[in-house]
Image (cartoon, rainbow, N blue to C red; front, side, top):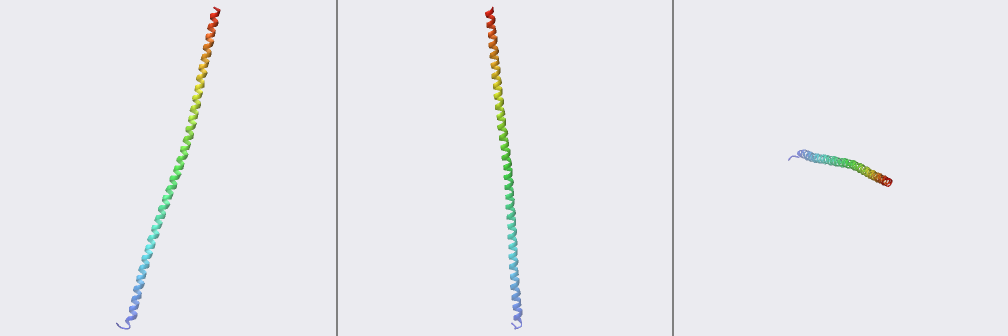
Length: 117
């Protein structure tokens, strides 16, 4: 090897090292980009799952409100049905009492007529 070859060899060695470092840095950057992309995807997936969970919770709350309204309407319907039943029962009892009173008056009139005859 000649003495003038030494600077060329050292330049080649330095260039090879720089190239190797550049490749490693490039690989590190690529890995960093892949990691960042994976993190973005994971974050997007978490956000989507959270949104879906919130939407499900909102729908569930809406159905609970509908259920509550239905329960109130059912309770009101039952109350009105009971009220109507009691009213019908009262009317029936009044009708029966009126009939008994009419029968009693008729019987009394017949007895009075028999006494007169």
